[in-house]
Length: 125
Image (cartoon, rainbow, N blue to C red; front, side):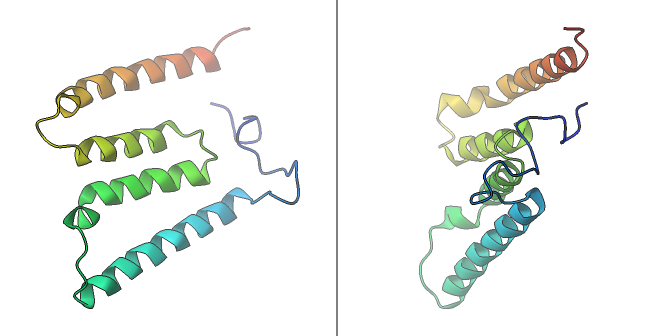
């Protein structure tokens, strides 16, 4: 498995000093934003302001977790994408055929991802 220093997509070395945010700082910023959003929603709820019920669902938490992973890992995180797609599919109405086929396709995609990653990391080329 490649370390972060060997991965060209994830780098802590600044190419452009003006827009570079180190990985640790990105995580702190994303975590802070998520806490601000959750605290604001909680405050609105306590003030008896009507908020849609899907905002308080577990799918929203999964979506935010996936977004956090994508933000902190520079958009090159398979599990971040998986969590975001999983949350979006669970927002979809139960009668939608997308939800029916999501898990089998997700298992197939996960297996294919693992094989491709293994072949990529162990290739002699």
